[in-house]
Length: 66
Figure 1 (cartoon, rainbow, N blue to C red):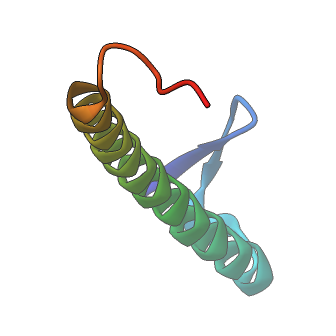
Figure 2 (cartoon, one colour):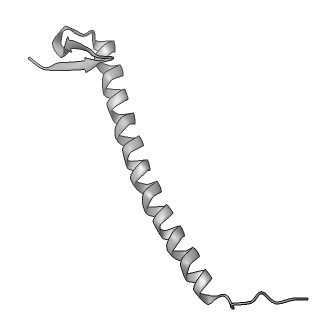
């Protein structure tokens, strides 16, 4: 017997309708995708910070004046 918790309530998976199980599966897939996107965002933000730091290191101490 598999139990799932939705909005703080427990439900036996086999007692859910086929449509409810399908929606649950879709929700789980979307949650996985969100988690992956958050990981990807963290990676990209880290890379951006590294590029910004490298750029700052390459800039002259004083900005050029025109």
